[in-house]
Picture 1 (cartoon, rainbow, N blue to C red):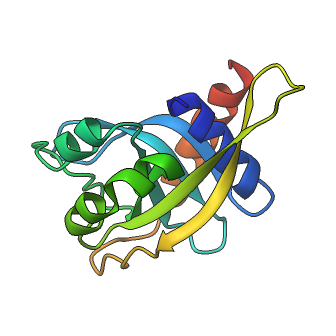
Picture 2 (cartoon, rainbow, N blue to C red; picture 1 turned 30 degrees about the horizontal axis):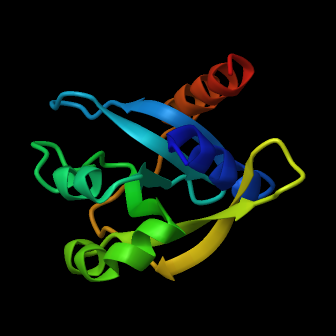
Length: 156
């Protein structure tokens, strides 16, 4: 299972209710950009939920040592999405490091008569705590992400 498999599983689960965009450069005034693996939002609340995708425990641990820690002002919720097998093997380490972030599991289903595995949204293990200082997208910000979203999915 790799990042694009998890992005696909998240998008498939959320697309009827949310605007979903993979691999987005998050611009924050006065700070350098960083890349979000996956974001989603709805047009009512206009707050972004960021999902950081991790496929190994080493990569998961490294994320907490970054200079910039998913701090864009429009991000109200931060989640980590990991394969269920990774969580099963390292739940104690993952739970200890999560802090206010939430956790989403992705299931891998081995289908013998199919040309590969199927990846599905496995559910929320922990809901993210809302960031009190987050602010909703402006109309210009909303249009910015909608344009990016159209370009990302069309060019895949």
